[in-house]
Image (tube, rainbow, N blue to C red):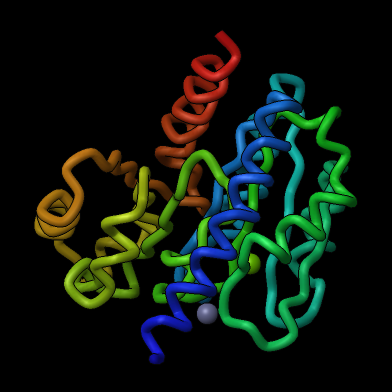
Length: 218
Ligand code: MG
Ligand code: ZN
């Protein structure tokens, strides 16, 4: 009984996600869903990405948070359109919340939409939003055992960003073992080590984004 209810919820979500996708496609928008545990660096990554794409592409942001608009305010200072979703306690974004938010995003004036999901490594992996790519940010202080603990999230990701590599000298984090564990779950995933603090690796991530955008436009 319970399994059927979950299937119905995910089925209804999938239908709305497909409508969101059509809206992105008809407006030539690349939409990416940024997921991570709390504090892994989603907002910092968005800020770094916006800075590097200024003058190259038009970015819009959807900010998902359980409450507060602190992250949205920080992003709004960069001068890009940002729409806040407060989930009111829900621990993930779903397609319906995203659809409501999209009503306030000027999609015609956006080439890249960054959707910051709620900080959580579990259910965001199950709810499609209509995005083209799923990005997982996993930071070094969280430990290198996360692929074993949250395999669905690592399985669903198109890209894993290993953030906070500037802290590696102080941590027992084995980047090779971590990458091997991810590849064991997901062979097609791309992995980029980055630091939003020092800027290391961010250029590679940004050029990956630009490549995805040019592929979609051609
Ligand atoms: Mg944030
Ligand atoms: Zn949830």
